[in-house]
Structure formats: C-alpha cells, structure tokens
Length: 366
Ligand code: G6P
Image (cartoon, rainbow, N blue to C red; front, top):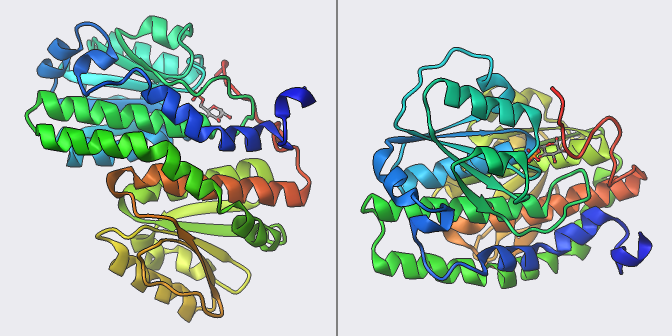
C-alpha cells in the first residue's frame, strides 16, 4: 500500500533506490571468497568442471550474459548463456563436467525450471542457482545455491534483483577463479574492496536522477530508441532497451556498437534517440568512432560516460557523467541510470509502471 511506498511513486522507483541496501545485504555474510559461499561441497564441484552453462529468462538472462564476460576473463572458464525456453527444446551436446547455473529472481519461472531439469536429464548433475527466493522450487532443485538478498521485488520490471544477481555472479566468478588458480590474495582483496564500496558507488549514481528526468521528457515523445554498448556493457544496453520497452511501450532495441554498420545504422535519423553506454574501458575509442557514425547520419546521442572520459556535450550529443569508472563491476553502476530512464519515461507517458500491460512478475506457465 501507499504507506510502504514512502516517498516513492511506484514500487519500481522504490526498488531502484533500494539497490545500495540490497547489494549491501547480499554481501553481508561474505567475509572472503570461497566456494562454500555457494553451499557445501562446492569446492569439489568447482574442481570437477570444465565449463559453465547459464540458463535464464528475461532480465536474469542479461545478468547471465554479463557474467559470461567475467567468467571467461577472470576465471578463464568457458561459459555459454542460453535462453531457457530455447535450451530446453533444442538438441545440444551435453558434458557431465559442466556447471549448470540457473538465474532467477522468483525461482519459479517455468521455462528456467524445465531447462534445469532438461540439463539434468542429459546427465549434467552439477547444478547451481543464483536466486532471490530461498524457499523457491529452483533452490530446492539445485544442488548449490547463492541467495541474493534483494528482498521482495514487486515491480514487474526487475531492478534490484538484477544488480544483486550480478553481485552473486561476480562472487561466483571470483570463487571459480580462486579454485582454478587465477586469483591471487591481492586480487581477491582488491575485488572485495570494490564490492564493498558498491553501495556507496550506486548511491552516487542514483543522485543523477534529475539529469535523467530531463532526458526522459524527450524520450517520452519518441516511438523508437536504439541502445548501444560493447563488451561487458553490451548486455547492459540490452537490459536498458528491455526496461524501456517493458514499461514505457517505446520500441527499443540494443546492438553491440560494432554491429551498427551491419543494419541498425539504416534506422538512424533525427527521430531515433541513440543511448550509448560508454564506460572508460579498453573499448572506448572504438565506441567513440561508432558514435561518430551515428552523428554523421543526424542521429541524436544520449551518452552515459564515466567521469574521466573526454566526451563533451555538443548539439546532438548529450552526456550524463557517471561519478567514477568502476572496472569489472562497472555494469552494476551503468545499468542504474538506464533503469531510471525507463522509469521516468514511463511516468511521463502515464503507463502503469509497476504492472505493465500483458506482462507478469513471474511466468510460471509456459
Ligand atoms: C518476467 C519478469 C522479468 C524477469 C523474468 C524472469 O518476465 O517480468 O522481470 O526478469 O520474468 O524471471 P525470474 O524470476 O526467473 O528472474
């Protein structure tokens, strides 16, 4: 009810603002990196696997897509990520030395549960879930688990569940890296420090809300939007586009920026806002040339750049500066303004933000 909402207009907004606390709670019991964070016997399993298969739907799938970058670059373990409803019905080549990881806010999504059972039926018995509901079917079905502490999420569009899933998946990456000899004590300490600082860092990003509101008024008048990202932030661009379409009903799609020339550039006109996720990472120079390609076609850019990036606002190029560059954990910060952009655009269009048409919080039937 209204009392629970406090100063917020919708549960989604409240949940976006709860992210610093949700992340802190998720990290609360983590005193160091160890396989046991994922349950008894995890060490033996981590020693026995040679790849990871992530299965999920919706926003949880994008958390998995982000984790793939971490797992391959930090833990050096081959990782594939599959949409649960695809995986369960396709012929695939099973490997019993696979760690099957489902990701689910609710732990009750029918396709994700069925995909898990399908993997098991193929002889893959090392199962784990990153899940927000400790009493869910998913947690019961998986041998290992990591429970995110986002608390109840009521808005249909997932926000705090997503960022806490990313925290859980980063911990999984570190635990696997450690088991496989790819994590020094120094690296562990550095990563833990960055994780612990996340609540403060997310809080600083939330303070950008007024700037995002200014953009949302312009977005509310559009019918299409394109989101670009590269590398670790490509799945974040996908998640930003998903959020916008789910709650504002604006058609949005995301592309890895390097693919612009292979299609979406044909759509770029002054009517097509192009949201660009531009952290100050190794791909920034490449991304800047992709931005030039958009500008040259008269496209209007809305860029989320890190504080230390030399991208300045000019006509047709709007920049919101993120407080700091956050290395490997940067996706957790960069998704937050995209959540706010979708939220405020939906508010400006007067949609039912917490209960978008045709969508359900948890899809328990196929
Ligand atoms: C629905 C929700 C999404 C969620 C997806 C997967 O589509 O609207 O917010 O990401 O289901 O749900 P799960 O509970 O498995 O994460």
